[in-house]
Amino acid sequence: MPEGSEAKANQLINKFVISLTEGKILGYVTDINVEVEGDQFYFILKMREIENLGKGQSMFSSEKKLKIKPNDIVNVGPDVIILGNGKVPPLREIERLNEVAEEYNTLVRELEEKDKTIEKLKEENYSLTKQIDELQHELRKFQVMKDDFEHLKEQLVRQEGQLEMAKEYIKLLEGLRHDIDKIKEDVDGLAQGGLEEAVRNIINEELNARGLKKTSFI
Image (cartoon, rainbow, N blue to C red):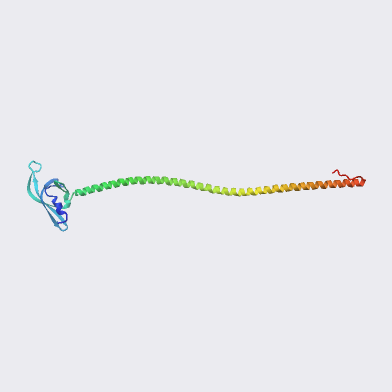
């Protein structure tokens, strides 16, 4: 007997058997055997049939045997065995399917939330990209302004150098003007002195010619 089948079989004794596909009570299990065919095993239910059920005169009739597969059993309760004859999955599978469906719905909701988050992040990314483009545009403007400033700075440096040269040139010209004025004064002095001397000589010569005394009025 396959492992675990005997314990499972013992759970089926002294219970009513209900068929979901036929919609009726098939009987009451009094005994059970396990039959193995190849790699498949079956439960052989020995049960009493119930007659006149629901007519107030229900009673057990003759016994009969019912051969079922383990997967024919939908559920086993404390009083009844529910059969689906292979057309209804076992209750544990239904419960598992419900769990899977709930997990799927949870995943769908999570995915929807993630989609919303992704859309929000896309919007934020678009906004940030736009801001970055604007900042890069401003940066390029500042770079142009910086280049213009450096160019003006170079011009100012050159102009400052030229101004210093001009100042030195003016100082030189002022020095030359002072020297020129000095030379002019010297020339005027020399010219004036030479003129006085020439006049004095002429007068003295005239006086000498007349036999008069030399003069020093100049």
